[in-house]
Length: 232
Image (cartoon, rainbow, N blue to C red; front, side):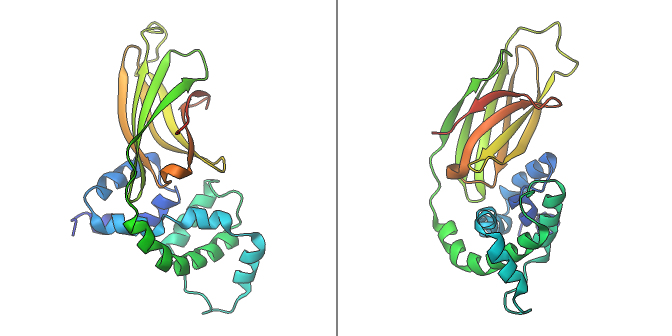
């Protein structure tokens, strides 16, 4: 067993639901590289976001009205992650009661879905070129690789020589966002861009390759979208 497993054992639900901060996400993904138990746990929980999106309010109401014991209790750490996600407005379209009911359904369905997720072969790496949205002299290219817990993202972002005289100390703060096919976006990494420099970074998302609609490089603070990359 990985010696750090005890520390990260309850991070899986928060990771899958996107409730970790960017720094926590990077730390947990580094741990996933060497911990088979956590990778397996993330794989088991990967269907949760899609199942939550498919659950209608009517079905959720029925589930909440069913007598106690009719459904298996959801994992406590999953409910904690859902509540935290709600506070951060990542699940703004769902009431907390709806999410709790959906979590109970997930406990039942994962017993069927997990074996399929575990045996699904990894997809080949996919290269994504970004198109500029503004006249800022920045360019980027990303490599997306399907892994057991979602998608690994490797990004090279270069800033041209222009703007040396106006660059703030430490460079301009940028962030990489992943946008799913429902239009929801989440920050997966951040860095500082400097004139004449190329930033190389690694990030990840619990979304599968087929669930990613686009990648965006945004300016932190203003939130302006600078670059957009669309997977094939």
